[in-house]
Length: 99
Image (tube, rainbow, N blue to C red):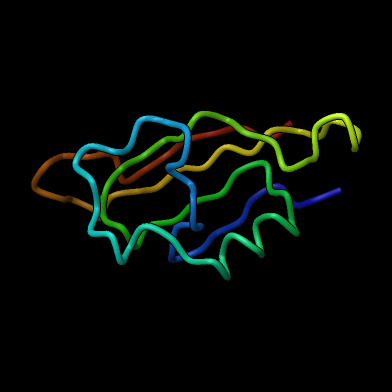
């Protein structure tokens, strides 16, 4: 069934694959953890928030299921948050509703 919200420090590995990358692009060593990707794939969260990369990034929604082999599941929305009161004025806060 999954979880509603997953909070991690690191971004999951591969989160910027197949979508336009964040601007500005964080340093490569902050762009993904295999362990976080494995946890996210196992838990299948509706929302996944991470903040260590230091930039705001809202990825297009995606699903954790094998096409034509598993029943379709809810989408996951990944949001990378910038530091609070950052000089670039990138978003550090995200409001959402879970129904």
